[in-house]
Length: 83
Image 1 (cartoon, rainbow, N blue to C red):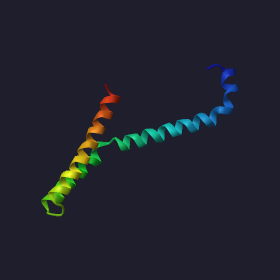
Image 2: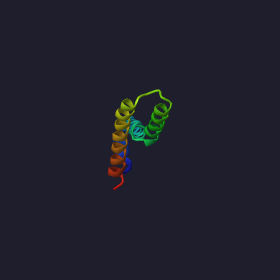
Image 3: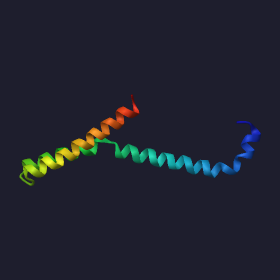
Image 4: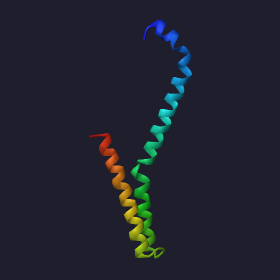
């Protein structure tokens, strides 16, 4: 950008800064949402609860299916972002 362009667009600097911050917030939120570690930890905790007799087989199966579907969604997202 030339000097004149910079001077003319200077009033937009706060908007550009706000947009940049919002982009970083969205990026961070997506990274947290698509992180497989919490889902894997929940699967392990679910299995421990089943083995300890804290939940029945039906509850385990239903919740396990939900978590595995979530892992599939995370993997598909990761594959889509990194073809």
